[in-house]
Length: 174
Ligand code: GTP
Image (cartoon, rainbow, N blue to C red; front, side):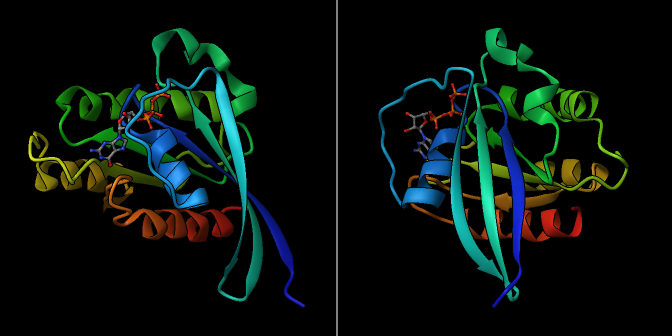
């Protein structure tokens, strides 16, 4: 028998960057081109076996729109690892990472903000209209000590890898 662990992951980032799509790809191996804005927050659970541990991962997908940003501390607290998502075709979504990062630390109040784990996902890399360079994004991540993944929810590229990294970092943090 493997010991069972519980882990909460949180996806944040601007509206439309693909948070729901990444979660749907990771949990259900599905993708839809149809955009339906998340209202408030949604969560899914997935059972995974990681490094000889059974982990029940609870993944929270939040609304990126301003008017839902006041969900507050209850949503953020207890997060073991935070996934910050931006869209490589939207420089604005990349610039917003700073605000999301800050917002998370204020609301979640982790024991040690300096070592709290973040994973950045540069989503929609399947699109040709890329406007944020990997180098620029990686520089941001090294300043903020975040792991960096280029991904596409549409093509299921690097989605499992990004979540696995978040789970491993989260396990060290609970
Ligand atoms: P909110 O719920 O409003 O915060 O948005 P969200 O971040 O959850 O975005 P969502 O997953 O709903 O995706 C927004 C749109 O982008 C949808 O039309 C998706 O089909 C599309 N999309 C998401 N990921 C990708 C991707 O990797 N590639 C492409 N081409 N489109 C994507």
